[in-house]
Length: 168
Ligand SMILES: Cc1cc2nc3c(=O)[nH]c(=O)nc-3n(C[C@H](O)[C@H](O)[C@H](O)COP(=O)(O)O)c2cc1C
Image 1: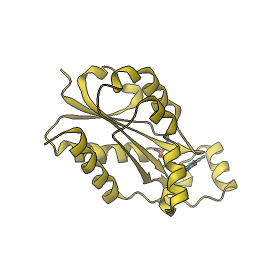
Image 2: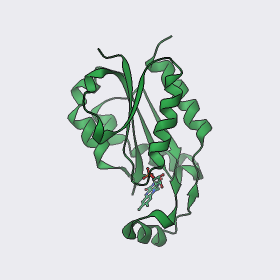
Image 3: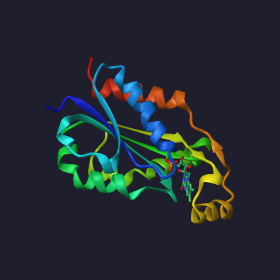
Image 4: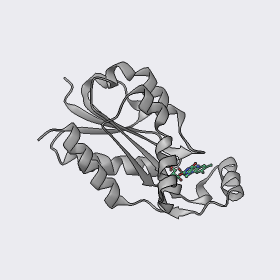
């Protein structure tokens, strides 16, 4: 029976996984069972009455895994409430144009399944952890590093999503 909520995510360095866990904790406050899973580990989607799916932004785009997941499962996902979130470093700078660009990372998945809500959140970048390629790109674009995640905004968004997907 579809009585659980899925929070599915992709991550390269772990920061989006922690954002997904915080969203899961907030959704659990509705008393509903919530599974927080890397999108590659989701097996039986029919268990879920709603799904929150997120990705970090790399070069303006979501990672491929959640996009492939949504494409593959679009038929079922269209029958339940779905929300999307994106985690990116630029979001920390704020500003309309930056947020619009971060939101645009979700355009391809919005075209597949229309979400009840979308969220964009500042991420985390620690240069010591990065692969050689990622470190080179970060040096070239002179991106600032640090942990800019804003747990209050993540929880407040998840609370708003909860009220949309778990009617009181
Ligand atoms: C090579 C590279 C490209 C990135 N491109 C973007 C980008 O286009 N927009 C953005 O907001 N953040 C960008 N970021 C920052 C990541 O989205 C951010 O660090 C995020 O928290 C990483 O999530 P993860 O730890 O789950 O992989 C980039 C980071 C790297 C290393």
